[in-house]
Amino acid sequence: MTEIDLLGRLAEHTTLGAAPREELAWLATHGTLRTLSVGEFLSTKGVPVEGLHVLLSGHVTHCVDRGSGPEKVIEWRGGDVTGVLPYSRLVTPPGNSVAQEPTEILCLHRSLFRELTNQCYEITAILVRVMLDRARVFTSSDLSNEKMISLGKLSAGLAHELNNPASAIERCASQLVDHLAVTETATLALGASRLSDAQLEAVRAIRVSCESKGACSVLPPMDQAAREDAMTDWLSAHGLDTGAAFALADTDVTLEELNRLAAIVSGPALDAVLRWVAAGCGVRSLVSRIQDSAMHIAGLVTAVKGFTNMDRAMVAEAVDLGLGLSDTVKVLGAKAREKAVSVAIDLEPDLPTVRGFVSELNQIWGNLIENALDAAPQHGSVDVLARREGERVVLRVIDNGPGISEQIRQRVFDPFFTTKPQGQGVGLGLDIARRLVRHNDGVIDFESQPGRTEFRVVLPVADQRELSR
Image 1 (cartoon, rainbow, N blue to C red):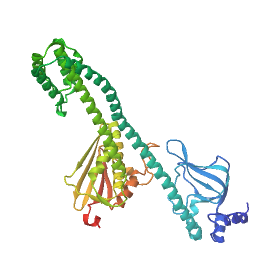
Image 2 (image 1 turned 180 degrees about the horizontal axis):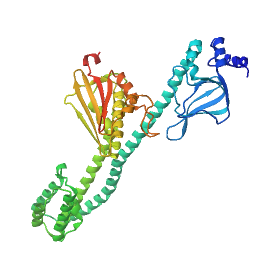
Image 3 (image 1 turned 120 degrees about the vertical axis):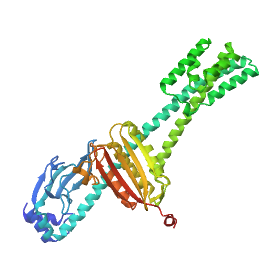
Image 4 (image 1 turned 30 degrees about the vertical axis):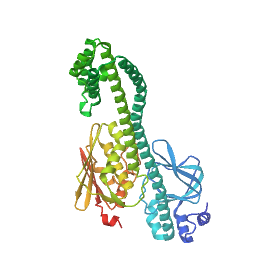
């Protein structure tokens, strides 16, 4: 292809064709024509890109592997421009660019960019606009991917959190059917015993002890086992059914109370009384577990609703940090338990509200606490502290992980920088956190050393008069 033919094709180029002819002539003179066959790489991940690529014809796709196989992020056809652009900081591409059909490209080496910007003002201006558009495409794609990864983690954690109480409800409901059948049989036997008023009063006393069991009565496993053995021995010594031992041991009924009952009620009537009391205790215990599990599920739903800020308008308001932090820790609870990491929230008494956007602040806490959980070692700790300092509230997220090395401290807030394995993030968590903090008129920074990394977020105290306007 002659230089005149190349100039003619550049004049018809969709992106560059509007540039002055003398600038297109400079590009044709200094560029190198290259052809790609189907499947040939234009650029390869990790290998520096040599220069500007002006597609004259053909089709090239850029694919990035985020852990689940190559995914197309962007594509170029004849009339487009790619590669390194003037003022771009691109050195190596995040993925591979591959020709999907025979492709013709005019390549301009990056060493000629200074001369390009001096000689070709219009082409440079066009290429800068292309660079900005390309940055928006990549940012949008990777931001969407980061959100999907976060959503996947959140969904997996919630599924695990909800599965435990849901399974408990199912088990207890199944056992409740059997306990109700036993209760009916014991009630009939108790009615047939024709107890006197004094005997009924003793039965009521035993039942009160059964119903009065509180949280403070929960015993360590070894002590509970010893109590069950004692109940079994007592029942066996009185010639009674030992099947009630487990249910009786789980109450506050004492051996002295059982002895007082045995002094008034004996024989088959005593056996009927204890079976009735044990069955009633079992039913109440199962109902209590079902109630606790249902409350746990309701609490998780409330936490997720608060964390995602559903049904709330996107306006700045006075925000209670305690509620948002509590919801965030609940949502990330499964991840903390997976590594046996303790998470502690320590808020200054009467901590004032801050001015901000609730959903954005919750996303900040989610990113920072999740990163701290990732950094903390097995059986480690994450501490969340908030204090008022003048007209600001300072929130600290501290982990006892290995720390951030000196070599990467300047890059932790950079977009797409990550130390996580492929597929577990694209390095936007801290970049997003920093942008959201700024949007909420705050400041974020960090300090790190081996065994202690602290991220600090400083936010303005809410001015109620301003917010009420």
